Length: 135
Image (cartoon, rainbow, N blue to C red; front, side):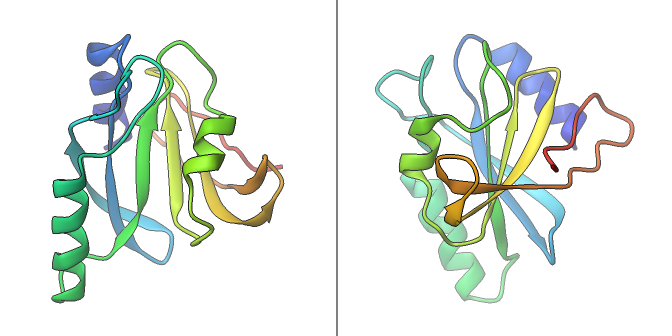
């Protein structure tokens, strides 16, 4: 799955890709790509609200739980940006950031180590290029 997302990120560059991660207990079981509806998709991302609302409704109806979100930094690192921190709710959801080559995962939380919003978490990138964001 991570390898697929890396390919999507490379193909979409210089625009950022984004979407929703599904799963339980910190384990991703699937994802859903979403259109990036940001005003400047080369510098920011915004998940299409219709996709996000549909996923939230499905979850409330017994569907797959939303584990978090993913997006790309096509010309940057896989560390969250200040804009990411300003956009993230402190809800403990996972933020996977990739750039077509590397990847890192973060929990959104109050008082996080990155911009007061993100805490590094382990990322298993078996079979794909990646890195852990863990300390």
